[in-house]
Image 1 (cartoon, protein in one colour):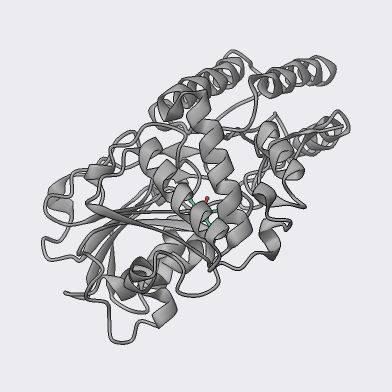
Image 2: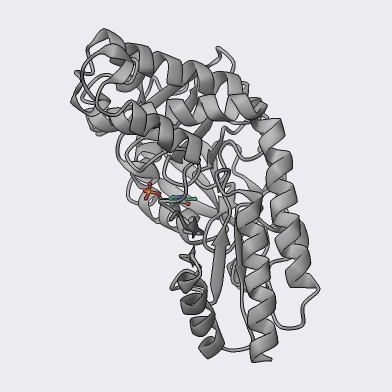
Length: 358
Ligand SMILES: *Cc1c(COP(=O)(O)O)cnc(C)c1O
């Protein structure tokens, strides 16, 4: 039996995609071999690589003014790649809204004059600070934000205005979950294992021309231009993860694209938030306008009950609801692949649990 997996990542993948991949596992497209066994220089893999890119371009509306690469290393490797690729003035401004943006800021400090332009740490990251152009240094190489904060459950509602300074966003936990105007960003990056594919592939979308002056210290493997020039095939790519990303993109396209999935995501998130808000038992501490539609943290009246909640839910096939160790409580991660039935089952359980324990 399949469970409803509320893990923040790696997380649920769409069942039709898993089934398709299972069917094609031993012999992909009549090749007599699995994608896991295929040379990345072969025709069938080159086709996968090209189709993954073109589907992503279609889904996100990425123009020819951007390069798109599918590489290894996870979002965390980009924390150091960014200041090594963009370093003309050796200055970078960071908006710190949670654990991952803080990590990105700390990594950058090893290579550049990294500065915190704004932070929401004063209120345990439960909101997104108001940002204005004047808060950023005009000669900064870039401004870095984390668009959706996976652990705390906050999100930006739009790209901040950074004037002429390039804007970079970590979109690991919300990419393809809602419409985003790519033209407002110079770089977008995301690890796959939240909303796209199994761990392994990391997507970097870079405005053309931006990556052509990396630091002389930048290792070849961290240079975006290396992989841009080689169409993501400079070295062995994370082929299976990229292939699954392609299948997820096809699935999303079939659903009606990002616009359609955004509507579903908003419905799912609203169901859960409305239930929490109407309950005196559960609580979500994030300021309403900044609530994530992907990661929904909540608490019950006590830590003891939180623990009991997580273990009882797991017995019913509602798994991985434990909150991040830094914030405690519960967290339901409800990415694109989580069906509405999963949310309904969670709410039914929450009702019962409240009744039995209040
Ligand atoms: C999970 C996550 C990361 C870390 O991703 P890795 O691929 O494990 O390096 C970075 N940023 C955000 C927003 C995340 O959700």
